[in-house]
Image (cartoon, rainbow, N blue to C red; front, side, top):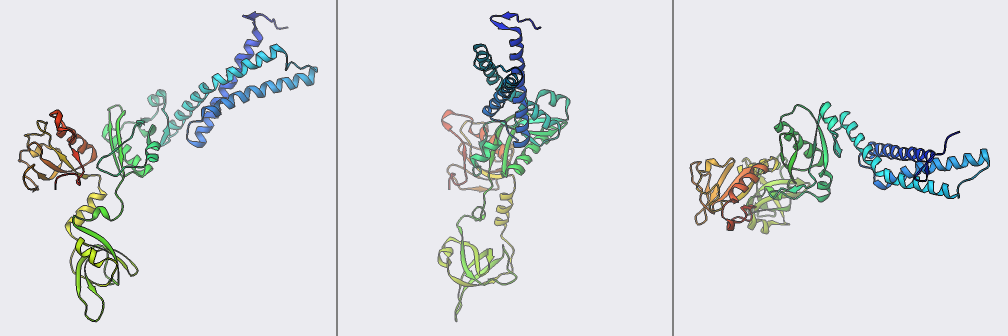
Length: 394
């Protein structure tokens, strides 16, 4: 016979049973969390974990009551002691549910990381990182926009924020950084990634940008693209220079353009804005000229596909760049526009920079951000230095 000793009014047997039910609830919530993480690749909602924990306790209590009724013909369901015991069991199950959720989720994340998962949402345990063959890179919750590019959709940034990426160990910081950039580009379809990492792999800054789509980014200043009805020669292809002729008994040449695309008898041409207004929507004949695509269009196409981009940065008065050589700028400066002077294309590396010079810089986003920070430092009234190409002086 088990002694019914009491402590603060609670029998030892009842206390042991309450402890056992609490452990049962926590284990149930942990198992549900592991299964949810495995199937949905996400953390189980806390309400579902609590429901699973309480359900396990309720199943035990109902089973015990039913067995007691069948074997002994007794029912303690509505006795005060049974009510108090059941209420305490449910309260403890509700309290331990979130703990089981967090424990199970952490175990699942670490197990998936050790098994070679590419990414997880959550933190990998320090034990797995120390004894395993992986390094976990956790992305920050705040994902910024790269000013030089179109903004990425908010849903994509929400998907990236807080995610933990798994990589092999023994990578240099630069190799790890490149892998993070490539993973975000491949998995989330972003065009550009600007990330700063500490030697231990901690990400201190993350920004993303979207590649410009369509024909607009490849059009030079003063040009436009129009669609016309025409019958291009069979040998014509995108990039060919063509003459635009009217149809009829007395053909007349109306413009020279660049063929950008053709679909049946609908042709897209890039040409001067004035000519574009005149030929838009008309019906013409095209004559292909023996010439190669213009260098400016080739450069625009290459720049559009590369990680580098162009930005216009103003040198702030009394800033670190004021009075320095152009060669000290760690990027390609293709032009300089002084405050009260004409544009200087392809300036000499020995040229001295002055306050309020506008620098047309081609570089990667992280380099542009660093140069922008250097250029804007100085007098408090200098303000920010970055401007998109359309914001700079004309």
